Image (cartoon, rainbow, N blue to C red):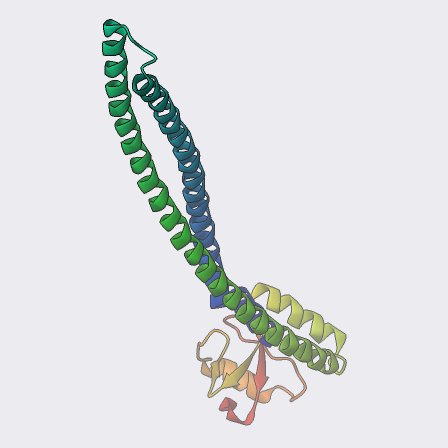
Length: 229
C-alpha cells in the first residue's frame, strides 16, 4: 500500500503542474521576444535606408547649391529651375527626416519591448529552474523511501507463504493497490463497511493463522487486538 501511495504522490507532485505552466509561459514569452527582436532588426534596416535617402537628397541639394553659388548656371531659365529644384529638395529632405524620426521612435519602442521581454524570459526561466530543482529533490526523496519500502516488503514477503502472497498481489491489482485491510472494531478499513454478526463470529472462531477475508470487498483482513472480536 505504501508503494502505491508513493507512486501516486510521485505522479501528482504539485511541481509537475507548476513546471508545465511555467514552461508554457516561457515558450509564449520567448515567441514574443523573437517577434520584438525581429521588429527591432526590421526597423534598424528601415532607418538605415531612410538615412541613406536623406543623405542622397542632401548631397544633391549641396551640389545644386554649389552650382548656384559659383555662377556655373547663367541662363535665367536654368537658374529659376535650379532654385526650384533646391527648394523641392529641401522639402523632400524635411519629409525624409520626419520619416527617419518616426522609424527611430518605432525602433526605440521595439528595443524597449525586447529588453522587457528578455527580462521576463530570464525571470520565468529562473522560476522554472527553481521548480525543477524542487521537483527533482522531491522525486529523489520519494525514490529513496520507495527503495527502502521495497526492501522491507521483500524481507517480509520472504516470510509469507507463496500462495498467500500471490493472493495478496492479485487483490492489490483488483482493489486499487490495497490487497489487505485491518479489521478495526468490526469494520473493514478497506471498504469501510461493518461486518455483520455472522461474519464476526466466523472470524472469531477461525484459527489465528487462517486467512480471513472481507465478505464485502474480498480483501484479506488483518486481525489485531483492536478488531473487536
